[in-house]
Length: 244
Image 1: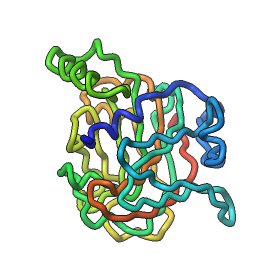
Image 2 (image 1 turned 45 degrees about the vertical axis):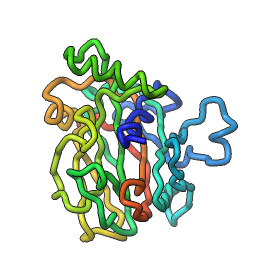
Image 3 (image 1 turned 135 degrees about the horizontal axis):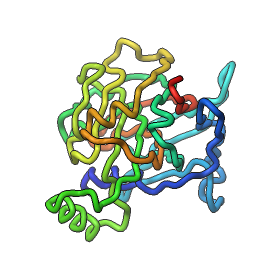
């Protein structure tokens, strides 16, 4: 199975239960309940698994002050998706907290067989195929022939990289429809909770050279299926802010 298929699982989303405030939209990890995902018609968080791949284990755990999501990957790959409908021009700032138990030793930003990360925040955009150039449209239709899943035409991954320096931005090793941005890298902050803030509006323009469309989904993903390694990570709430 081509790793490109990973990116098809996160292009499924519409507005679903996001808590609105005047200056921020908060996506609470406390809404995650693994016991109800399979039995609820429209759960706040949904799990996206990959064919012929073991799934990463996600569980909700309580700390001294809040709930966080714990992810454990053993040569596995799957993600948790939250459907949204957010205008990045109005809410350009994304903030989240994460902690990792270690890096993916064989992870490599630039190689297909190194496309694994202990932690990533995956953002998808509602990009119309009508905006694709002819060659890309043909590519899109060809991919659709071999996949029953929607294809992501624009997405950004904020990742905890192994080798890429923080601030590095580059197309995904499988497709330039997805851009990777290294927010943390290496072992320096392993085991430490870090709060990270990015301007998703500007990041999208830097990556794709155009104005960003509506944000359609947010996913949490810890994966090690390419390298065969293992990883452990923790995630806090994800917040979109006006920046004012």
